[in-house]
Length: 340
Image: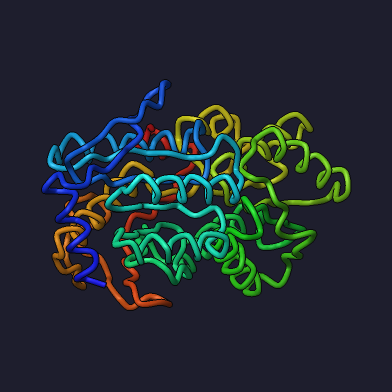
């Protein structure tokens, strides 16, 4: 594999083969590049979480002018659309793919074909991805899910009905978080899980409608643990409009700026997150190291806050699992420390 990758990269760098990359911007113009191209592919474009991740890709590009770093994603949270983007970028001849999978299983074959062509593959939010050379996680996913649920339990007083939302049933990290939450809730015997794993597809409006259904079905529900970045916005709106602020607890993944109003009103109890900007930088940093055939070792720094002393172990395939320490929990009192 190393010989194949090296030969492919050498052709790109010497200019005998030119990589084509889509330059970020509304026009989406294709231009030839004589620098290594790192293409980041996210779950969905145009939402705050992945807009923030794109600022990390842009920052990495500015700090590393010897590569071309760009970001792409489907218009909707659709694993098939993401797969097509990966296939298109592979055909264009990019040097590296940094992917946040919508559904890891759906893209396994495409990532294998990319690696067989000598393309470096790095993933994020997919520690079960087999066809990747490195999966980068901001933190231990079980610890994160437990932390979210414990904060929810505190708000609920350790008793009452609660439910969970995930972006999709194929989202590895989301299922890990709610699974760890369910496990943690066992230490609070008064908590009763109802109708778990509602799929939101990271759509705040769809989440809002589904949350209203849950509230109608379970008028005595006391808590929601959510996963996708827009879930807290949809559920928080439903709680607020139902006049249940302060009566129903909501803890989930979200970003400070979009969540600010609902945190201030109390409709959102607390948010958990890592900085997507830093995740974007970390993925690209690992991709560049692998392109240069430099080792990624336990305890090393990726040069990115939250990834200064990463834990590196073997992943489920032939690649590495790289885990940082970037978890943050914030509520009304603390969210302003992390405004993005």
